[in-house]
Length: 253
Image (tube, rainbow, N blue to C red; front, side, top):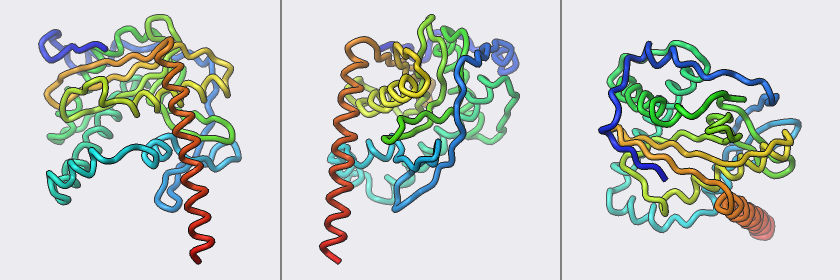
C-alpha cells in the first residue's frame, strides 16, 4: 500500500494535466451491455446472458454488522445523507477521471464539481503517472454464466496488464477495511482473462479523500490468487442464498 497524503505535489492546472495523454491500445475488444435492476439487485444484460453484478454478489454476502452499528450510531437520516453525498462525490470524481483518460475536456463549476476536480487531479498526478497506455475505460467485463461488472480502467501500469479501480473515501482507509474492494478487482481480473485470454498480473485501487489524501492498494501474486479464491467462495454463497430464497418463496406461498 502507498500512502501519499496531501503534501507532495503542486498540481498544475487542469489544462496542463489534460495535455498528459494516456495512449489508447485497442488490443482487446469490449462488448456493450445494459444494466438493469431486478428484485432490487443490479444485473447486466451482456453477450446474450442476464448476469448478477459483482457488487450485487458482494453486497448480498458481506457481513453487515459494522454497517448496522454505524447506522444505529449516526441515525437513519444522517446515515442516508452521508451515503448519498459519498455516492454523488464518487460519481463526479469518476466523471473527471473518465474524461481525462478519454482525452475529453470536462468542467463542473459547482462546489461539488470543483471539489471532485481537485480529487481527480490528485489521482492523475499520483496514481495514473505509471499508466503508459490503456485498453479500455469504463468497460463491461463478464465471466460467462457467472457474473458481470464494470471496471474503471484496464491498462499497462508499470508495464503490467492491470485492472484499475478509482474510489473516493470520506477518510483514509486501512488495509483491513477494503477486503471487498480487492475481491471486486480480482473478479474483474478473472473475467478479463477468461473472455480475452489476457494475463492480468495485478489490480491497483486508487483512493482519494475530499481533503486530498491519496492512497494506493496493489493486489498481485499470491494476494491476487487469494482474492480470486475468496471471491469464488462468496459467489458460491450468493447462489446458495438465492436458492434458499426461491425455496422459501415457493414453499411459503
